[in-house]
Image (cartoon, rainbow, N blue to C red):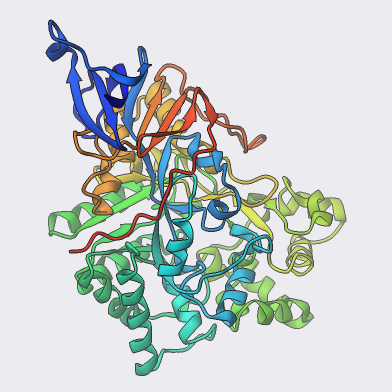
Length: 536
């Protein structure tokens, strides 16, 4: 007898086609039969060791978070309800060009400092890996949800070239190409870049194109956080489209937003650019989160020259009064490349987390609010935080536009990504709420997408981008990564005031046929594993 039958579910199978009522049978981690209501009439209904009554619930494939920052959280927090409770069964890690493999001892120390605002310092973890393959093996010891990995281009550059703003030598470029190839051979699904973050932003297009050609050879994809989401956003998108076309590499645009005042109402221009490229035969997808504010680290806003040489060099520049004034001038008067070419508006920058508990009074306030309370300029407050917390503060940037968000999420190549930073006392609620917010707010309440369309955006489209032949759809023989949710009540519990609140209306989540969420509670199952690149 099979393991489980999910009885009388409203199946939204991920294809975008209308839902249907069915019994779905699971055995040994896979869907073994689907008996539609019409076919079941007058015949013996399937039986199993366990029967789950799904009356009134939608059964869909598990959701794929195409832009996750759980690289260390998956290792330190076996519960990981932030994602499991949303119905996420697969996350894509290694984002924005900075993560923890491939590294040597020096680079690992530097990267841990540089992205502490995303992941914490990791002092509670044993970093017993250095290569991509070793990191994936570490995930295979047991994690809450499945995870795929992108080779981070900035980390590769830090390992080979360092944190200097200079061109790579031919020998260095050859070594970077080998490291990318090794990462893909060991199971990575593609390459990411963070082109407003150091040191990845120091790479010219020719260098990125050379690396993307390697990615294309292995059947992976390129996932850039491109050079501007502000003043130069459209040019930056066009640059990535042209670069991927030159390399012959599939392109996935990370958190494809149009932010800051200069881009209000301009989402149709972005989509027109993408439609032209798609019509020309380019292979392009994108992801977004269903919120207007963004999230990053406070140090990321600095001009790139201020971060050249790595974290310790950046701290030394911040400590020097003359250099600090030059940084302020670039931030406030010119618009730094780290802030997307737009002069920073401190009333839009909210501190969401700090590493030093002694600085917790700043969390939940904008830099401008804290500066007013301290009786000093906003830059003085920001500088104090960067030095005192050694570059670790994370921030929310309240710079988005609702109509842009809605317009982009309707596009036919759109997928969902939380870009969720789990670090900090008051993280962005997208880390806990992205997927139920799509289903509750944008499907049920706003009607921006139909339920069938939305589920396809969150399941089969990302699975196709990742070239996963047995995930993303409810089909016989596919892996039983499944979500049961109530379409009448599903909603994000997380808010900006209470960002760690779990969602409602998602009672059951299965990975490989094992319940990781059952009756709305985390079971303790560590059913997740590394999902490696499928060979060509």
